[in-house]
Image (cartoon, rainbow, N blue to C red):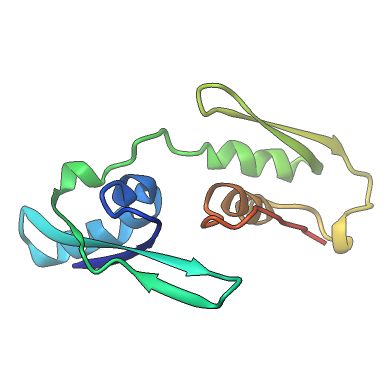
Length: 144
């Protein structure tokens, strides 16, 4: 298995992108029927200004087992988030706590919503991805 991940040094990129790459890596590992999966991690840089991509051809080679591909943080409380939106609340802000927890703030809408539709957990997922998986670009999102 080869991974090409954005960054300077391949030695820590697997940790940086763990929450994203663990799912496909685990699927591949399970598909092989083996206990371990050898993975080559390559670092690449994408220079938007000069429109060039450079690749470090010296990979970090790791041997992963299923135990290394588990979640490192508690799962998001998706049912509670969906309930938040199902009550007709329009999200106004999100606050992150010191321990990785977050708080949603909103107001009850009385028929006036973005694009005439109530906000939903799908909208929240777009915001979440923009903030936590922006790939080095400044996070920005508009739900208009």
